[in-house]
Image (tube, rainbow, N blue to C red; front, side, top):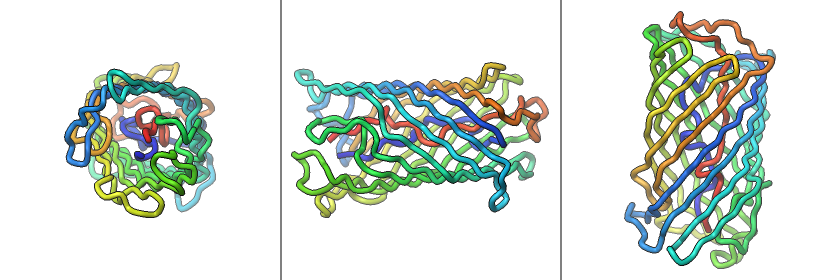
Length: 316
């Protein structure tokens, strides 16, 4: 068993910036791993490779309604996933279809405020993932998790007058019980452990339209997995990814491209990831940002809550 899919590096530059309006977003990710690690980070010899591609559609709305000083909003995300795994050169598995639906009925986006020599944007999102994805207890690989997931996050962006910006997103992951677990693993239920995961990025404004930067992500599981109610010792996962990226703004929307190389994996695959994301704000507030950086393009970015880690694949 493994942690359910979650946002690892799927969001990056200027992540915390948003305002009243609506957003349509599509993200396309490719992931390939040729190493599966154990609890000590050592490679397991019986693993060959894992390849995953995912297309995630995201719609969101930030309203003019104020709650606790922030603008209330909501969103929904649905992934389409194709995956192939080779536990050994002589064996392979593949799955494709719709992944789990993620929704949030409670987003609070606070207006920018002065902080030091720049401006700070902040957002709180209480997202829930429903077990709607393709799942088969007899399959060694699944797209859906077959469990409810609570995955709230806090996002921020601090943008300085010099053209630099720092963005982050801190998540808490709570997976529910899978009461139809893979039959070779459990008789009654399985429950993946809780985890914390973080996206962190820094970028510089090369021109009014182009930003270049570095993005990272990290995940640390903070409790053990459970099988039929019993803790599975040594089951905690960890990973760290880092790589370059860019953001390009045009009248057709915002384009984000990020690539990552992973290291420090524990109890999970380790590989490389490419993320391409297009965000278009329709009926959005595109008035110039109240940014300390006068060269900045209008604020119209609200990035997606929780796309799929490695395309939404769970190995059993």
